Image 1 (tube, protein in one colour):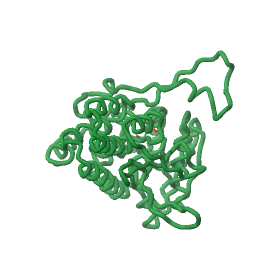
Image 2 (cartoon, rainbow, N blue to C red):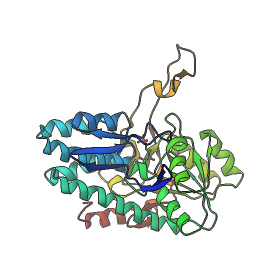
Image 3 (cartoon, rainbow, N blue to C red):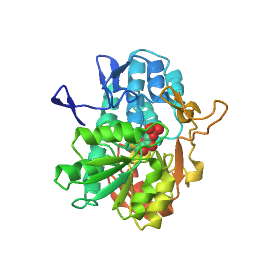
Image 4 (cartoon, rainbow, N blue to C red):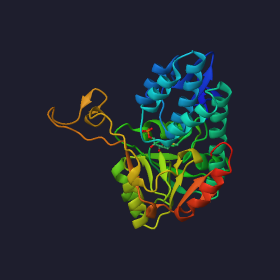
Length: 338
Ligand code: MRU
C-alpha cells in the first residue's frame, strides 16, 4: 500500500517479519499516526490479534503464520503457542487456515513468508477480476475495512477499487463509518486518502438513504468466513446493507481469497460469532455515550444469507453463490489452498 510519510511516498505492508520480530502497523493508532508494534513472542502476537492492533481476516492469518514461525525460532512450546493463537478471535477462518498451513510446514519461517506472499498475490488477482465490475465513475459502497491493512497488501474489497483508480476510472467510494470501532472512518478512509481516491465517510445508518436515491451503483465488502452454501460472516452491519442493496436492485459483491472459504460448514448458522466488550459500544474515546447503568451488546460480525450475494470475487474468478462448488474444486487442485 502506498503511503506518504513526511512528504515521501513509501510502500507499507500491514505485517512483516524482520530482525527476529513480527512487525505490524498498530491499526488502533491510525489515522493519527503510523506506529509499528514489534511482537517478540506468542504473548505479543496473541495481544496484537485479540486487541486488534492487527485485524481483518487475511491479515490475522498472516500474523499468526509469522507468529508461529517466530515461536519455533524462539524454541517456545509449539502446542501452547498454537492453542494460544487459535483462541484469539473465533470468526475469521483465515486464522485457522494459517495455523493448519504452518503445522503442515513444520512452522518454518520461509513457509510463513510464502503464506504472506500468496495472500498478497491473490488479493491482487481479486483486484484484477473485480476491476471488471467497475465502470468509469462507478459509485461503490463498502463496509468496514477490507483494504491492504486487513490483508497485508492490496486488500480484498479495496483491491478492485485501487486498480480501477489506477486505470483512470475515477471511482467514488461511500465509506460506512462502521461502528463501534470505526474501521471505515479511520482505516478505509485513510487508505483511500493516501491513494487519492475520492470518497465520503457516511454514518452507518445513511447507507439505505443513498442506495434508495440511486447514488450507489454497487456494493463491495470483504468476508471473515464463507460457508459452503455462500452464507458469509462479515463486520456487523453487513447483513442490513445487503438487504437494502437487494431491495434497491444494487449488485452486492463479496471479495475474498480461498483462505476465507470454510467448506467444512454447510451454512452460515455454523459460523462462530465473536462478541466483544460492552465498552466498545458504550464509550467513544474517553466519553461514555449513555447512562452509567446501561448495558450494551456487541456482536462483532453478522451472517448474510447467500440470497443477498450477487457474486464472490476470488483469485480464481467471479462466482455466483450457486457456483461455489467450482471454487471448492479449484481450491482442491491448488497446492497452497487445499
Ligand atoms: O473486526 P475486524 O476489523 O477484524 O473485522 C474485519 C472485517 O469484517 C473485514 O471486512 C473482513 O475481515 C475482510 S478483510 C479483507
